[in-house]
Image (cartoon, rainbow, N blue to C red; front, side):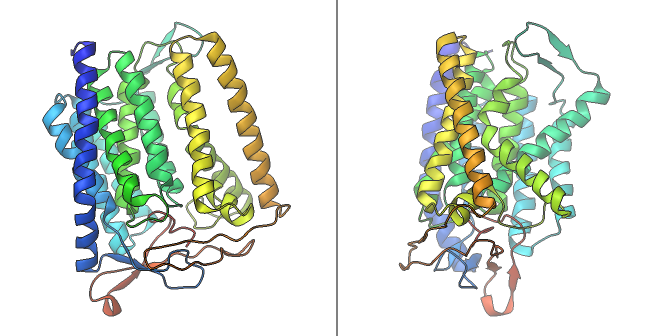
Length: 401
């Protein structure tokens, strides 16, 4: 086991190395996507981007995490799960980006990646109850399905929030950096370093993905990020000996969790499958219902994530004053956001004008209240002969464009 100073130094170096790699190769990925025609075309007036957008950002992030992990991280079962399972899920995401595979096929690919974890015995075997020192050891009959449910939830909720420029990458940056600090504090050095590498990967990608985006991550990127976050949470946080270990990932990933829960309830009440494309997500409601600009909506959601992550860190170090203050602030923020979302959905707010300044310049009004979302078309060169419509929640802002 690495001692704490060595693990912290490796985590910092891993962050810098991953960020440097992604910063250097993302323009290359964008060039390759344009050269080969792996792009997203703005097909309708409702699409918020006005120019053709490259679609290989997820591949750049995959390479950005792969190289530092191979160079710096001890080859434990969890590391192998990230490398092998992450490769599988990135490949599945690329297939979905290019060929619009069915939701069932995509879910089967996710299960295959999760099966790699289980084969390597990376699973939720026990967790510590909140506010106690008692740990619950889970039998295999409970541990295996619980791990599958946990991983599938995180993978898909990251995929679901990938709906505005920079949103998924920024939320994952905040979450992975928080997981890195918590894992290192719990002497889970391997996962702490891995989480820091992931934070560097997503942080650098924001340079090209924050509004107005110059490249999209696609499903290859969003599912890969969700998978790695899931493994880190299972191996680096839930297995910790902290008295609130169960609470950490729920707080750190609280915004995506709430968005997913809200969508499942809304679609269940509407009698439609939860994976059906629409514009009911939190970020859609802020832009289309409340009239927020993309930038303002994303920054607001960043702030919400930072607040919840700060609460998790305060609870980790047992600071009653900070935990109480941040807990009250988080409750007020969450209540205010849910009230705002309810009012936006009920049509009690007047949507403003939202403009998107893309590479080609120009702006476009957001769809009117209640107008269904439409997604653009991914094409492989030559575009006129090999066009494919993108599936659900594809790439940054595509569920809305």
